[in-house]
Image 1: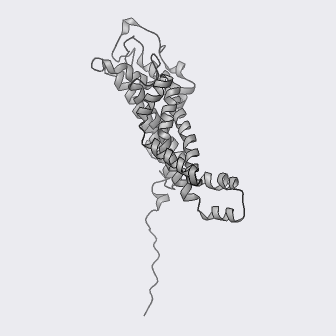
Image 2 (image 1 turned 135 degrees about the vertical axis):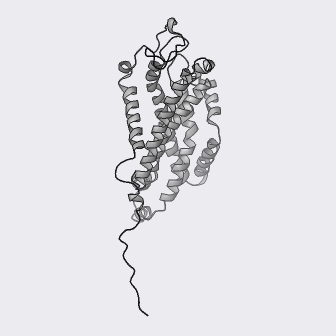
Image 3 (image 1 turned 180 degrees about the vertical axis):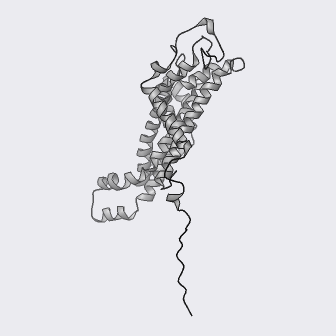
Length: 290
């Protein structure tokens, strides 16, 4: 019987790392530009970009539709909506980042405790994660607002605590997958201290997916903040936070559509930008070029 050597394939299909070319997709570039502009507006340029004082009342321009003088129209007090959206960028972004920061800290502590501890500590961490995961964020917002009153700090903690269990489940799953890896067993066999094993081997590999999760979570947190503010649980007026703008304009949606459309579009665009960047980072970590 003659053995036939397998022919070498010269035109193999592209693997995951060669799925798309070196350069990011136009949607990713657009998302990066949106996020960059958002950061610039929030940190250094509200006063330079806003055409009017966001708190200045002009009774001669009450509920004016979009025009050259007021591209996004005005509200019930004659305040320029574009200026209020620009000034609200800082507050909305701060709420999103603050909520994600709180959620990340809680998730890391609970996820590592649930994945590495044993006995009562592990049972308590797992039960807390599962119970809070089933607890509605809106209900948590109502509870905190009733105790501490409405405001940006209350909003940040309500959203951060509300989304932390989902992050904690991700960290717990990664810790359970990493703790029995060969390099962890090797470090244990040569008697490395447990703290060194945790911080040098387990934590860096288990927390890598959190980079993607945090990026995706910023847009999610901004949407949650806007939703809670729309229900009257967010930043009280006359703050120009985006959710507060939606809440202020809902009564006049039939006569002044711009009070809902423009803040809503800004929220959607920002959330999509962070989501697109999060997916791009996830693909890069998996070795897929997009």
